[in-house]
Image (tube, rainbow, N blue to C red):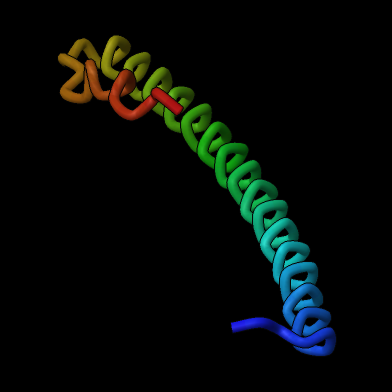
Length: 77
């Protein structure tokens, strides 16, 4: 099927508009991923600090740290 000039123009416009929309969505996805990565890094840092405090309290009380080893879990981001 051959497109007339009006149909061709219509479809070319759709291509341009949707390409821009896809690019905008890709940029939004990247921004949100960056936010999530930052949040995860902050949470992991807080968890590590809490584990250190817990370990120190266990040492001061002379009891075994029942959480030892857990601080290494899930740190790969």
